[in-house]
Length: 380
Image 1 (tube, helix red, strand yellow):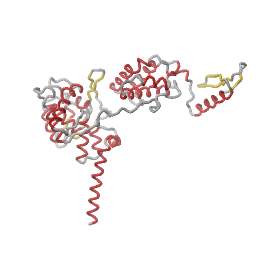
Image 2 (spheres, helix red, strand yellow; image 1 turned 60 degrees about the horizontal axis):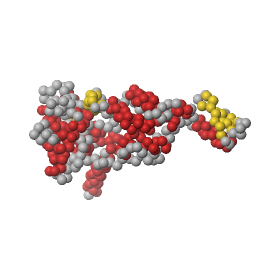
Image 3 (cartoon, helix red, strand yellow; image 1 turned 180 degrees about the horizontal axis):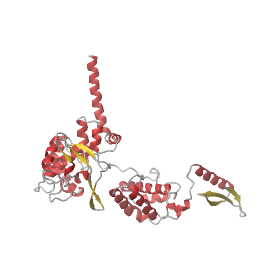
Image 4 (cartoon, one colour; image 1 turned 90 degrees about the vertical axis):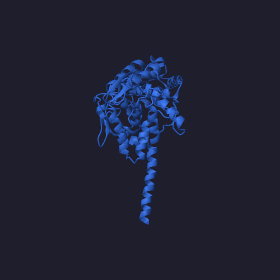
């Protein structure tokens, strides 16, 4: 590499990137020397690349390449992403990215460009979701050698606030869970079309902590009764672009066994009596697969509203709060963290502790008081 003075009085810095000769002109020698220092620093840090590549690739072309990799091996290169994840990426791109960014080159993505794009969003939730996806896409461009740095990895500069929660997560007591199950069994908005299985579904969800996709895709053969009743969670039913698809895997990618309370197991065993092992445990009255949106609108939310009318202390909940209910009841009953991990379906007990830290903090205080009682008794 060298800095040479040209006949026109300017200075040219000659250097190499990826074995190819590059040069750039400057008005003064000081500017050329500063550029030389920048190039040497980048070379030492392993970040010196030919950024002209990014000027030749359109954002849409990069999106197709990036999504193809996600479908094949996932974001970490370990396993293909689920169809639900891929469908979510497609929706974000088509709705929020393509109308504004499709024809831009990768090299044209600067902080002002990204900030102008972020101003087009109406909600913080959509803004944060799309910005997070853009960050992943541009990071792939950096890793592929198309860009030197990722301009979408600075949420502070780009003013992407964390969305304010619309509601706080809630959990039901055992009596409230029973009341909700009774109301759900009345058939939701169809007051004259009772369906006891809906009540059992709510009771099952609030005591086992299974996700909606795991419950709606649960097959009778996954239930085990006897002295130690349990459910082996291995299938899910997920919506992909408006269609319901069965998946022979859970969110954690591994089957897990979750204990079922005896009273709930008795009702379940009666419910699936004579049912083929491959048949769904919970269906609509007509025998079709359950959709979360329909169940929430027609059954769950009307049942919650009736419970609130009867009990002023009944919380406003969504179906996912039944997972928190199951964990809360288990912790209250003295369950250890590994059992709670099974119920929550987390891959690590650390995740369980992080998500439900408040519950375990309360349990820790109870434990401290119990130990204090033992110490006091020993002193006496």
